Image (cartoon, rainbow, N blue to C red; front, side, top):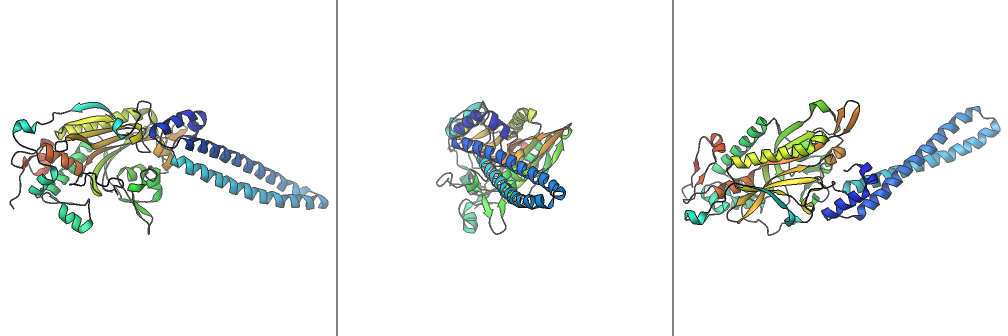
Length: 425
């Protein structure tokens, strides 16, 4: 959540942020009114409570005649205090409800607009000219089936659409990617983590996934647990309700977990293959830092993602995501999009988001610097979303005979294999 002091002192900035996101601007004024009512209710309760305490001190000293009147007044005050307490609780709850609906304040440098209004910051690698090489590229599913690596038919039979099996070298390729990603993250100073895939509502709400993103979340109603769509959720909640000494920052974790997404609203999009699926594995970087270092950490996360994709020898571009395409928690987000030959365009493989103190306030994660205690900043960055990375590797490194060259960085994790060969039918 945002800092309420910012809302009170500069509501126009909050309105501008909501407008840039394409979200409800009237929410700002509703929250201002609710906050004022919350504070005035608190003052009213305190006044009545102090009056009640003062009256309580007078009663023992009063004459019998005075005591009767004071006791009558005490009864009325008791009822007034109870009503004021209830009004304060109601005002608190209303203000919190509205505050949780408000997205993070977008960074001033973020391009304004919708999904297609991003700005390309960098382009890396060389796009292959398959025509000049004398063959038409196959898509990842055709390649994966020939390699004995992907089985969509049985995935659909067992679990429905957008599910799949990775088999043979497909399974080995996932394990190689995960191990290589964790090795890079560990080398960079991240603590590797295997995180829960089920979390309580507060963890999901605290990271901002029960607002605009709630339609894509799986909820187990009987147990009131949520299946995570990213290990960002359990990593953000790892230090929930804790105060961390400033000299221990930054804290960096690399989480590996299964991820679950409904993909609501994507009917008819990316239905072929494993690019957009309901379940996948991912390695996620997560940082807790001093707010003063948040922007620099954001750039560092991006550099680690670029290092990863460069090591996989993939052509990619870096984009500054537009305001209307930001998640509720992010003030700014950079995506790395890899070139997908058969689609003829760049597609998102990794994201790096700066959430400032937005998640930390919701989850009560604070830092202590001397006597000062304040919310810290959280950031997250995808290092390897496995299925999409496999898509990019298969299509970009395919050879004319249907085999696929293995990037050098993965070879030690694939028993030294240099090429993945089609299996005999």
